[in-house]
Length: 315
Ligand SMILES: O=C(O)C(=O)C[C@]1(C(=O)O)C=C[C@@H](O)C=C1
Image (tube, rainbow, N blue to C red; front, side, top):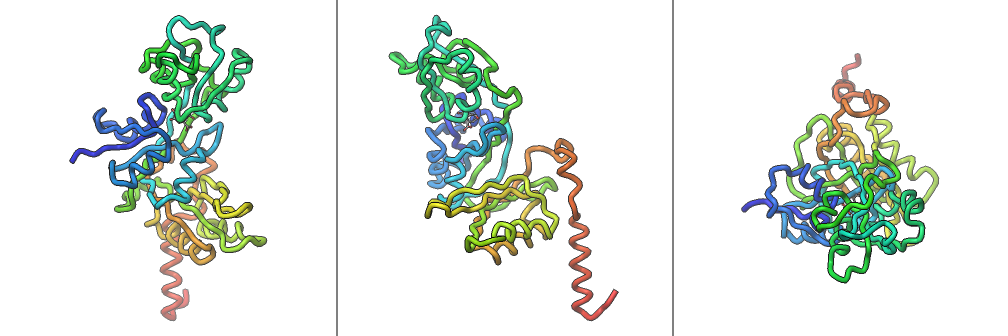
């Protein structure tokens, strides 16, 4: 049966652009728009689709909490791919509307946070309303008797719903980008590519001095670079946190595997969220991320050395 993919819809979201980048050969009917991040996760979990795409983090606004909450607390799904998409915002309204007519602006909370400067400069008195996505805002503005006068959305969404641009490039940061993940039900892992990321959630055993240090040490001593570390409430009690971690490398790399075993020993729980190809190639990475402090070859050589010691040989 042909594969189908859920995404944060409706048509015209940045998430749809991410899905097109991740699955360029998928025909239109393979893309299943969902209203909200939780609905994408549920559709993937229920087996209604093969996988799904959701936003994970934005370079300006940070994490998408709805996605993190599903990854941390929901029934386990794994990440098998990622991509990042530049996010450029525009203000769209029904044809004939002028900027002076705009009193109510709708958009996604992350988009609103990224256009604050432009809004306070150009529409200081407009009321702002948040909806489930930037394209949902554009669609709502296009409806007869719409509750909003304008939407902050991608150009493609404004055009898709027959609106007219009142302003383009209204984001506070022209170089803003959002990172999206491709999620599936647990199954076969993607093959290592030599440029992978491993995502996980570490739940510390007990709040005490050095508890986070113990988690980080598992990576430090094995020369595994972290690309993201975020503390999130577990939801169980006020002040109870877990740590969302992205590390360079694949679970099949010995040192990443050993770091995971180390975490398993020092943490109350570890949720493995997947190993998957990194979207930026190493040549595009900043030099400070390379070279790795130790290589896979160093690791293998140290293992052989230990085996020799254990068998009674001394170098
Ligand atoms: O609303 C959209 O178009 C989305 O794809 C969601 C989303 C997000 O959740 O951050 C994606 C990119 C932008 O930062 C704004 C909104």
